[in-house]
Amino acid sequence: MHDVGYVAAGYTVTLVTLAGYRWRLAVRTRRARRYVSAVTGRARGGRRRP
Amino acid sequence: MRHLYRVLTVLGGYRAQRVMGVATLAGLAATVVIGLFVVPPDATQGDVQRLMYVHVPVAWVTFMAFGVVFIASVAYLKTGRIVWDRVAAASAEIGVQFCALTIVLGSLWGRPAWGTWWTWDPRLTTTAVLLLIYVGYLSLRKVADSPARRARWSAVVGVVGFIDVPIVHESVVWWRSLHQQATVLRLGAPTIAGSMLATLLLAFVTFSLAYGYLMAVRLRVGRLEDRSAVPVSSLSAPRARRPRPADVPASGSADLPTSLASDGHA
Picture (cartoon, rainbow over the protein chains, first blue to last red):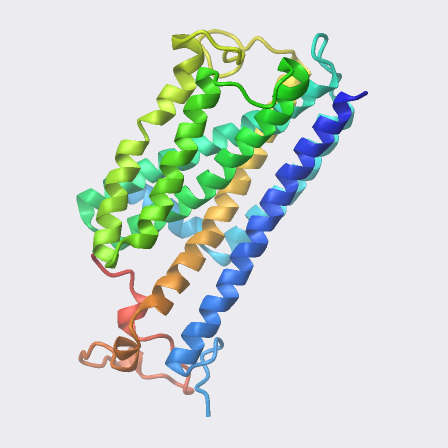
């Protein structure tokens, strides 16, 4: 029964790592898109900023 | 190389990404439910053996990720195309996450099974060295001062560093080790019960899908970050070339300058 804690911890760490990395990639995508839009003066949808 | 590039192009598509994302989520849910509640516990190790369904596939993805780094690094050194450098960087980053996860999961398994969190066992030590090599690879990418030099240096490390992968795999055969020997990837039939093997194969597929999905997303991030790293001057003055009729936007829509939109050559 004591071993169940290690198993639960292992599965939790695995899922949290995958979700955390995916979230981090989403943050990096948003940041890079914002930067490219700001520098080029073009919105993500392709429209030119006024 | 051309086939691999084509596969990556297909995987990078938005629809393929969504399909892989959904399949990964479904696979993870199935692996967790079956691994924790359906498959019987091991006769000798009991419930702690259930960690195998995440530890072994995560280790497999680590090897695969570093294998892709190796292939992409060779491709970069051969062709000089910066897209291969991007593939290698993406795969190394994911591989490092999975390698660290492999060590943590192994430690969680080792504590109840061996009575210790860590021991300087050949398999554990070579895996720790593998992690250090690719952390070094990622660090090297941060310090190089030009994209071409960064790509060349890291390609060399990507090729040389891969030497440790077969050493990790064979370490349990070459040296006396606490770690158990291969039960699936070995000559002859697997020495594992049918239901356990089926669950393990499901987990292999799931974590491989997770790798494919993360690669697709990470490659997209890499492209965007490369664009945002280009000097402002080159953004405001795109490379001059003769306009073609297809270049004229019909309703004022436009993409990034051609110098940024293309993958380019180092």
